Amino acid sequence: MNNTFFKIDWLSILLFTLLVGLGWLSIYSTTLTDAEAKNYFDLSTFYGKQLLWIILSFVIILFVLTIESKFYERFSSIIYVFSLILLLGLLFFGKTINGQTAWYSFGSFSLQPAEFAKATVVLAVAKYLSGLNVNINKFRHQVNVFLIIAIPVLLILLQPDTGSALVYFSLLIALYREGLPGFYIWGVILAITIFVGVLVLGSTLTSIAFGLIFISIIYFRKKRKNSILKPVLIGILCFGFIFSVNFIYNSVLKPHQKERFEVLINPNADTKSSGYNLYQSEVAIGSGGLTGKGFLNGTQKQGKFVPEQHTDYIFTTVGEEFGFVGSAIVVLLFVAFLSRILYLAERQKRTFSRVYGYGVFGIIFIHFFVNIGMVTGLIPTIGIPLPFFSYGGSGLWGFTILIFIFLKLDADRQKLGS
Image 1 (cartoon, rainbow, N blue to C red):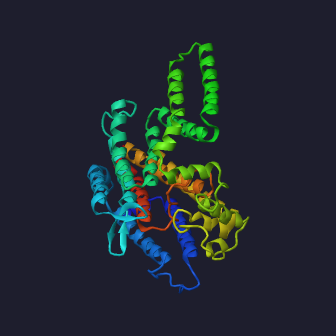
Image 2 (cartoon, rainbow, N blue to C red):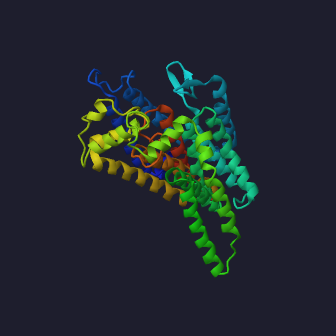
């Protein structure tokens, strides 16, 4: 532990502490009312509970840093299986809140296993990819690693918690760094582009646009005497998907999921019903102007106009009370933290530690990117919290464990060797 104290990356800890502290101030401001006594440790309030969870998270940090680094690699498979058992157990013993059976209830305390499963899945993926003779370019190994990710995703979808399940797509970043063919990532990007394109432009215009693109690609490849087989096959798949989008949209997506896409396409169409959350979110952020209305002075917040503002929409409090300047500072802190994690991941001597570091980066990045994009209307509403800011003990503890396992691995990188 003493060795870890001197070698741990203190810049990461500083950024982590700043983000957690600003997150608690945002929750405090969002949930404080004039009727409440300003007792920071009042456990009947959201900010009181969050402060307790923050204090306990530092106990968790000490525990994580005390454990030997080799433990996380040696027992990663057992930890992964244990997390699957917890996720499966929710189907029989879980508590249902807002239509999701995602929590174990212990009196007034609830625990969400999906938040802790992020770290266990990243450990399992890192363990597999660091194995002897494992080559992510081989299809067999790709299938195996995708299965490691897919099993918890399916269990989370059964809760159902689509937002938490989508987070695991971020592990493609770690897999790509280790040599996964790029067409997986480009395939996801292309599928999203086609889906949104059909919803906005319709199947005919989208087909024409993609047709012109593929004709141009085939023309230039033939001119350079390159094979046209790959673009032809990709084109056939794309056109097949284009004419499947309407079926997926009308027959597969649930009504509330379709509403989210409709709000994204036309945010002003129904600001009193399906588009209410986004409209109020944009109003709150926009009303902050350049420097904001000041801490505790947000009028939109005081009027409780933004639903669930202490959880998924917590960033609206930052925008309203601290304006563009405050929002930019928070975004820059996240960027600095993510950049630091990426730097630490790249300097690792061992595959296990490097893959785990990239997994940490990917999960925090997707949470940050999706949440900010959601509250500003750039992407559809998805129930993904903002790390360190959104209210919740399971989320905070899950991120804490995820991050500090990596910081422990980084601190011991010389000792662990190549």
